[in-house]
Length: 277
Image (cartoon, rainbow, N blue to C red; front, side, top):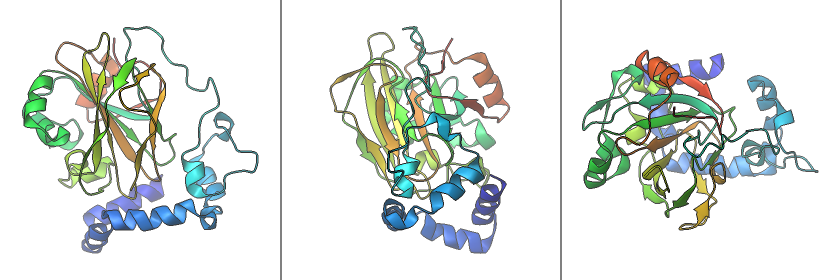
C-alpha cells in the first residue's frame, strides 16, 4: 500500500503527475485498461496482486479452472457465511467492505470530514430539489481500496429504483485527492439509486467510480424487493466508493464512526456490519 500512496502523491503533487492525471481520469483510458483486465493476458497479474495486498483467498469462491482474467478475480465473490448480516430490522448495515466516514448532519454547505473540504449534497446527487428532502439527515461514505471485496449490497430490506447515471470524470477517491482541493465525490461518475424501505424512509445509495474504475455494474432488477445483504452490483478494477444518504431523523451513526470522522480518520468496516445504533 505504501507504493500506491507514493503513486497517488506523485499524481497529485508534481507537475508531471498532474499532466498524467489529466489523461488518467478520462473514461477512454479506463475503457482501454478494462479491455486488458478482461483478457487472458492479464491473468499473470493475479498472483502478484494477492501477494502484494495480503489478500486471504480462503474467504472467496474460486472457479474450478481458476480465474481466467484479472477482472474475473477482482470481482470475486465470497464464500457463504463470510460476511454475517446483522438481522436486527432496526439496523442498517454497511453495503461494502472498506473504510467509513460519516457526516452526521448534511446541510446546504456541509464540511466534509476529510481535509475539511466543502461538500455540496445537491451537486452530489444531481438535484437541488431532491437534496432539500435530505438536509438534516446523515450520510455514510464507504471507501473501497483495490484489495477490498468489490461487490456492494443492499443495506436494508428495500425496493430499488433504476440507477440514474450522473456523468463525471474519474479522480482517485483516496484522501490525498481531497488534500489537493479535489472532491471526487462531486466530480466523479456516479449512479443514483433510491431505496424505498419499510422503516428507514427513502435511502439514496450512490456508487461512485474512481480512477481506472470505468464500470459500475448493477446486477439487481429495478422495482423488485430485496433483502438486507442481497448483492446489488460491483465495481470493476480500482478503488471506489459507495455512499448512503438518509432523511433527517432516520439514522444515527455509531459513535466511533462520528468520533473518528471528526478527527479526519476513517474506520475499517466489513459488509453486513451495523452502521447505526
